Length: 436
Image (tube, rainbow, N blue to C red):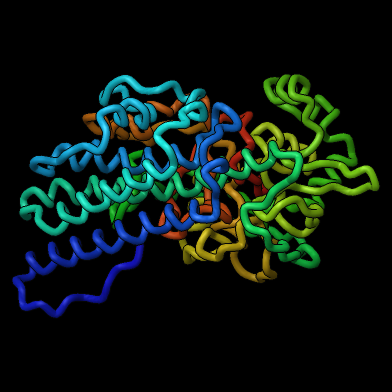
């Protein structure tokens, strides 16, 4: 989130820093909360209530849950005399925090027709007003405890902004009318850039968050990794390259697939990325937030699982990157790219570059071969917020780099996303790597 210009108030240095930090978080709170409301603004109540699958949540639930987070972890703990909006919301809108209490079953979130969308918006306004008052009036010693929880809450809501759009796309894709979230024709990227390779000599590198600014607990501690010499593809794998994989029988050759992957492909009948459809007159189309449109051969392939990404890499005579390889490549690059701030809402073709790899930030989350686990020295924080990341460090794989629906301020070179290997409704793609 943006930092305001330095204040000119004649305060002692430590008080000045505290005031500046409070102003920064107040501005960030307003910005993040307004963005969530803006993302939901084009939707009808009917759009915001259903749940298309167990992994997804209704838009209404995302708006309520992010308010529940501030209410539960900040307002109830630090605002004297805080009046909760509704006594049943703690049960309805808790996600997975065992320490907070019982909760409504995740697969049944779409059956909660009440509260209404307007009541959820009232809930957000209630929480916003109480947070504004608390930010303005909390004594400095209390603010020191609130500030890190507030920043965590802002990054938590940014994650849900991405999920809101991701889950909405899955919902819209169930509709045979192929309705668009935004009725705008997608921009096509022309020809794909030639595949080039960026080489790194390997050696001992430092990865993980460096301690400057916000990070989730799973991004640290900073530690050393030994990398063998490697090369990364200069851009993400394209739809055109994926079409070649399909034409060569990639989905029907068990030799390309991990055992669990082949079992999943066989059970689910996968023959193309999620949201793709082969038209009767020939050619492929893909459903996106802009509606259904012809597949753009130059754009990055999207909505593929870890299993599919791994099979493609094997077919291409390469492999998936390690997360540390992507981090050392991204660490020296500015955090710019096709992210939510660009408002394209779908992956776009890479721009030509003679330098470092393109698309290290934005377009598609990039699968890695790295299992999601703790870094050396990792310790789960105490309390309910300690449930945020650590307890999910099992059976999932790390993705890096963000996507076209990731809020810009959410990303860092050390940011670790993680999903199960069969999941593909997220904006997930891949970049090739190889040993040298």
